[in-house]
Image (cartoon, rainbow, N blue to C red):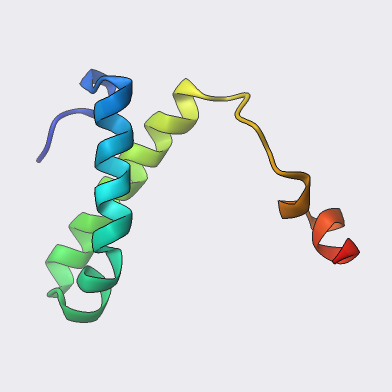
Amino acid sequence: MGIDPKDLSEDDLMRELAHLYQTRMEALMHGPDDALARHTSRTNELESEYLRRHPDRDIDPGRLREGARAR
C-alpha cells in the first residue's frame, strides 16, 4: 500500500510524514485496529527512509539526556 518510500522525492517524503503526523490522533482514537496498525507501519516505513537519507541529521542537544537533566 502506498508508494515505496525509496521512490518518493524528498518533498513528497516530507509531505507524507507531515500528513501522517496530522492524522495520528484520529487513527489512534477512532480508527479500527487494522487502520491503526497500517498507520503505524506506514509511519515506520517513512521514518526509516528519512533516517536512511539523513543519517547525520542535526540533533538538538536539549533533546539528549544530558540536556534534559540541565533543564
